[in-house]
Length: 485
Ligand code: GLY
Ligand code: MN
Image (cartoon, rainbow, N blue to C red; front, top):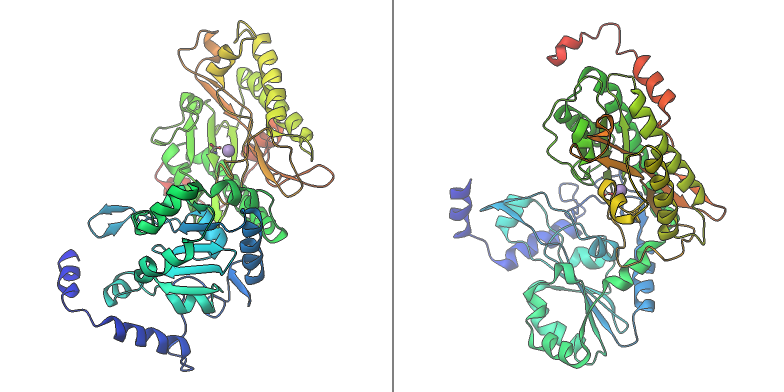
């Protein structure tokens, strides 16, 4: 593969020829040459997008109003530069799976690497687009260029990326402040003399305070995708809970949940699933997922998927054998009560910080009552729970991180509520509590009148979980030895 690639690069058709091919593909009425923007579009993927949508569920008008909104938030005469996410190589010509930067995706709708978008009050959105070589097309398939930027992504202007060093200096020479996406900064623009000069005069600032502000409150189209993403996560985790009775193995549960998410349309997992059996459940972001869950132990699964740019994030903890022990019940009751009481606090005007404070007080009191904590000091509590009660959720798992947790919540904001207790195996407490980890995480949409739980379809009450696990039929003809156990 590598050898062939290198050989071909010495034999490439001219850029002009490639462009002619692309233009012919774009303008031809011949059905053989359908326009391909390098990502699903309504004409090639009618099963995913309606006419007028740039990405599934999000219309062109919505993208245009996002750009307008970010420009309204930016100071006058400022310019913002946002590069696409970089491609990380696993080795030589073999890349890791690409995930677009959320700010770039939010502004442009473009899912491919290699582009740089510029927003300005003077010209709106200008997209500098990669120029595919024939090798790129051979190896990666179609790539969106300047035509797609104008015709499909509805940019106001577009240039090939190799013109950026000529065009961008004019765009930023009179700007008052230059903003950029710090996470994806590339020398292509940071090393230009004009950028350095603009940075020297007005400073080079982080754009994310504005993009996170715009992304924080979700539109109704975004909420539809969030509901679907949550629903896929719930269905996948439910199937995985059922599977756990016959396959109590972390690796199989991890594979199962990913399979169940992806066959329901998710493009990928939102993060590596946490599948912690027994004491592994007390490792908050456990990711090895390579142990067997022993009979009578709990398993904690924290999972989420990504659907057309919007993620889910939910956690359940249960005994694959189908029976919570007395000590599990004691701890689980405290966590599930905290989860439900915190959800009831969710409404406009409340903040994650205030819900967090409530959860700390409640969990501290409960843990002290069980003798697990010896005092009320935060330092002691943090040994068994160093996490926040939740975070904002949206295009990223820990979404809009520039917005503090003390900010009062508004309708359209989605947060997680995820109380937990994580008792290390060597923690100084009664032995029966050692090595137990329990987290129950739901997604909560703030509404005008309070809240909507997006993950409410997944059982979390002990009796519901036990009934589910103990009365599920795996099918009359299903020989579970076929699973190899
Ligand atoms: N579920 C991952 C996290 O909230 O950190
Ligand atoms: Mn979470």
